[in-house]
Image (cartoon, rainbow, N blue to C red; front, side):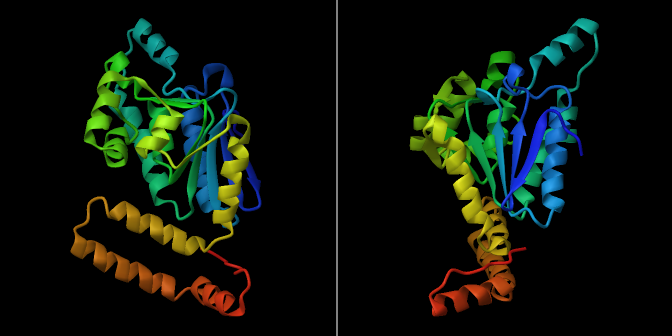
Length: 264
């Protein structure tokens, strides 16, 4: 696969996907949406990939949809169905990130706005540069939050803060995002990728079968009853307990050595 707007790099079992339209603040335009979706699919199909990082080139993570594309549509008189692009690209991408059996890290290196912010929040672990910010910019142009924003935001920060962020569209700085529980950690700008890569490599060396099952359990807990969740934990634990990684983890503990997990 040859991609211009999403760079794909694999090192030590970690694939880094870099949104690469820096002159447009990595806005989703041209073929970038499709290339990101294809890159995630490629990583999912590669047995050598054990963790994934999404980041941006230049001074932004992703500024959301490229409004220049929509202006061209309006000026041409074309009828644009905003829901269709969600059905075809954004919603399958968010579902794919949630369903991936490997950990997904967002390394937010600058502004993350609109769909860009919500793609980041769909990842399993979010680390932001100190200069980064998160903006639910939809209300500024008469739209509603998409790409999973209305789902993830209230679960991460509570209804009151989610309503404020989405109705006002104010920028939320990285430090406050961390304080509110929106993201996992904040790093100095020049240390962001080293921090994200270090975490990704740690996860890649871990029992990725179990990590994928942990993702499944956590995602299901959002809608399961306690009884349903207890049953799911039982079922997932049977899978994990029958794995080579579990046997290796026990052996390494007894032998006081570092485990060599094989993962999924």
